Image (cartoon, rainbow, N blue to C red; front, side):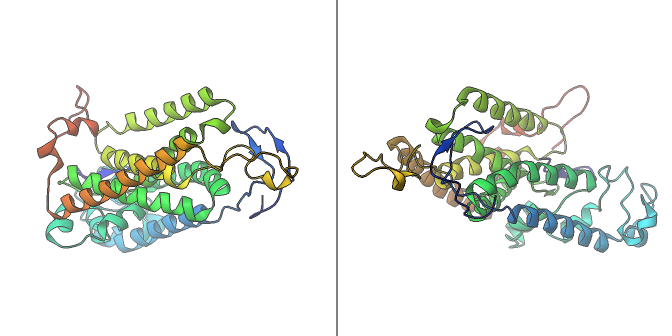
Length: 327
């Protein structure tokens, strides 16, 4: 896409399953009384993202609006849904002007144009087909599992609030160009998976393997963010928001709590949660409230994050002999 722009490049409901415990292929113990949900919200998010992309391409109308300075439209057989020239947008998508018009994250318009809604709308826009496919495949693989285990309300909240957290941090550090994509929300789901593992540590069987695998996946995805034109601040902001939300929303009862009603009379019953889970919950809730409040105030006051952190720009782009980061 055009220089200066960045993309964000990341059983039945309530069914009873008996009253004993089993160890499945999952790395934690699963109680057979535990509820499993049918995943429908994540598939709806995928449909919504694809629908928004089609609308964006329809409004873009490359055959009519392309001036030909960067070459001809790609896949012209698609008519007004055809893509911008690859020199302008190598991801097979719309122009930067179209994305900006339809709600891309733009610091100038948020701060001076009173368009705070862009912090939300940018989550539903994508720079191109490649960008869209990468994010939607990740959403399916990550989101469906979480929704099946924790339900649509909690996973939906994590997705949306993480996307907002990514937009806030991005707006604080990227004042030139635009930013679009669901990667902040996706990194929030990854962050929530990590905090879920930590706060429910005692029910996991392969703790080290699960933790190492998840940390490697997160590290690789964050490392990709140091490439030019990838908004790693959205990734980091979404990850931090999701990580804290996981402590608040994804608590599991101690092993044996769900099946306590099947215990013989007089049998000792453990408390639902451990003390450290409550401690994590309180700390995470406080940090979330303070973080969102301070972040939003700084954004709407027009604060520039780079003025307060001289090295933070390296978190989003590291210059090398192969590329430069510009501004």
